[in-house]
Figure 1 (cartoon, rainbow, N blue to C red):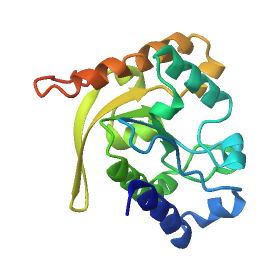
Figure 2 (spheres, helix red, strand yellow):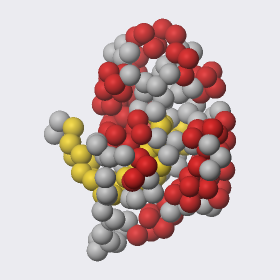
Figure 3 (cartoon, one colour):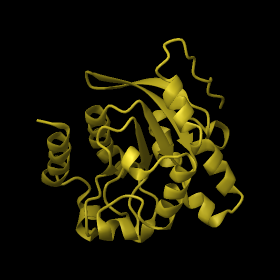
Length: 206
């Protein structure tokens, strides 16, 4: 199977496996991802909101529009990257996803990454960050890339993680806007440097 077929199989496995049936029962759509399946950079948020649930696409509401602006400021666009969430159904009332919901969807996110094989994962907010950098505080590590190795079963993934605040943070706190833009603007340079075997990623401080 090619990448598109393998990603479609992940979608089917979520549906057939009846993952998080309480969420599925209230959702309009299963929101898998959007963008370039050969992307070097994958953005990962927490869960779909109202607009995402209605359209079946991630980050298409107000936070998504700001994400598009941030990408444009770094001379990137949505067609350059792949965007998804840990949880694939909208939690009722846009509440935070529960730990058990994130845990249920984590193996499917892992499969997405395994198929796409990005060089960089940019986490959007603490919910996605905590799976890649457990115990880290986003206020301390945002904008600091770190190379990590992760294990799921017999599969290992070596990847560079760039923690970012969630774009929605800028909608409620105007002072966050420039921080988000500056952090995301690092991505093109990180992508160039990550190919260098001698490049040592910055040490995460907690």
